[in-house]
Every structure is written in C-alpha cells, then in structure tokens.
Length: 340
Ligand code: PMV
Image (cartoon, rainbow, N blue to C red; front, side):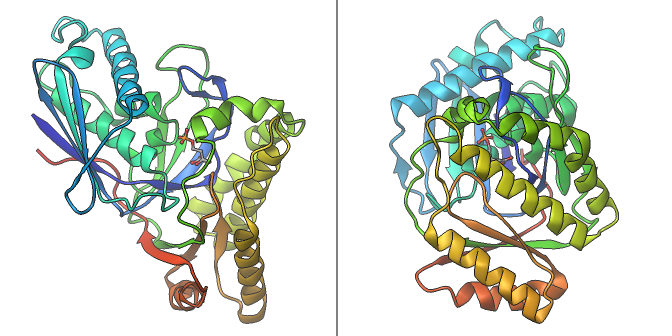
C-alpha cells in the first residue's frame, strides 16, 4: 500500500492542443508554477478487483460517475503499458494495475473552484503508482511525469516542485513527452491569489477542448510563437526572477490561448464578464500603484493573480474587495511526494 500527496499548478505558458489526443502528447511545450495547496492524497493498494473511491474535503464519499471510473481504468492501462516499456514487466503482473488495485482519492480541492483538480489527481496517482511498484522498478521523477501526463497533460508538471515545463518531445511513443524542472520551490517566492467569480462547473472539459484547438485559424501561429520564443522568454524570466518579463509573456500567452479557444469550431468561451471586469480593474490598479502582479486564466472564468511577496498585501485587499467572489490563497510549492 502506498500513499502520495500532490497539488495543482498554474501555467504561465499554457498547454492547449495535442499532436496525439489519446496519448496526450502536446503540440507545443508549456510551463507552470506548482502550488502548495490545495492538496490531494491518493492511496494505491492491492485488491481482488479494480475499484476507485473518492472522498471530499468534509470526509464524505463522492459518488463517482461511470466516466470518471473509466478514465482511471484507461489511464492505469496506459500507465501499465508505459511501465512495460521500461523493462519492468517481469516484476509486475500483466494488467495488475487495471484489474488488481484499489485507489482511494482524498481531495481537499473545493469543487468547481477553477483550480485544475485533474493536474493534482493524476500527478498524485502517478507518484502513488511509482511508489507501489518501487520494489520491482524504481522510477525517476521524469518517468513519473510521463505516467502523470497519461492522465492529464498538465499533471506532468505537478510532479516537480517550483517551476517546471512539459516538454513537447519528439515521436508518438507513450514516453515521448515529459516534464523538466526549471527551478525548485525555494528559488522565487511567488503567490497565487485566486479569484473565483462563479462556482459553476465548466461546460467543456479540457480533454474535449484540446481536440478543438487545431480548428482555430490562429492555432498554427500560437504553436509557432511558443516554440520559437515564448517558452524561452518565460524560462529566462523565471531564472532571472524578472517579474516584468514574466508578466508580459504570461499575459500574452493567456490571452492568446483564449483567442484560440474562442475562434475554434465550435468556439469555447471560458471567460465571462466578471473575468474581464477583474482583469481590467487589476490592470488599472497596477498602473496607478505600480504593484507587481500578473493575471492569468485557465479553462474557466477564475482569475489567478500571481505576485511576489512585495505585492501580496495589495493584491489580497484587491481580491477581497471583489463582491460575490470566492478567494483562495496559495503559493509556489514542493510538488508530488510519497507519504508512505
Ligand atoms: O491537463 P489538462 O488536459 O487538464 O489541460 C490543461 C489546460 C490548461 O489548464 C487550460 C492550461 C495548462 O497548461 O494548465
């Protein structure tokens, strides 16, 4: 029996679109900061039959939909296939991970908060599976990031603490794309003050969304920009702790991703009027008071305000002044860990 803990991440260069949807092989590289909370814990143990159980913040059991259980089963089957390519098959029974494990998920992520729970869940599952097989095959964190990617592309980045990329990689193999740490969680203290304007579930999940990316006439240019300069600019900004450079490239990339989403067929509108109002208000505050802060949004209306320590108090009071919004405070964190 093994238990792991992990957390979501917030992307500065967004992952949107795959070259292979089934294997979640990304079309372009991406980059994020791993957060220190909220946490997810997953226990993997041997069992007579495959089972997944999920518990909420208050300890009550969440009834899983068939499609959720199926996703776990499919991901475990891909994980098993990848592990087999590492010459570990001898020690691990064929289809053991699909048929003879029980998985218990304990999530501290408030539902529909707009924080990527799939990134936390699948990085956690990957770390727990790595722990579960470690007597037979010890996986590196890079290999664990491949396992995580098979569940959710962005999950690969939460394996590492601090700041990490999801590399585009080459080829169409299960292991053709993985995560790389740029700097650990002690490198740069950045906070993420999360403003949640609406607590409604998003309509189109990212798995379906990725498949639409290439229908936007602006997608080719997006991929080209990330490959040729944006990803590099973002890495340099982080290495040099250059907040202004990080702000420019992150906001440019976020708005570009939403432009692609809104111009795909069918169009995906994740931002709402409240999101736009908050973004305009923070831009105004930044100009007037010279506060170091950047905004970014994933596949939902939630606004992430990322700032260094010196901007924190001003950003927090701004956030708490937004009527009808839920506020969640988090910061750079250590990534997925094995607990037992
Ligand atoms: O990992 P997925 O398939 O849930 O995709 C995540 C997509 C975004 O959150 C919109 C961007 C990102 O890089 O996290």
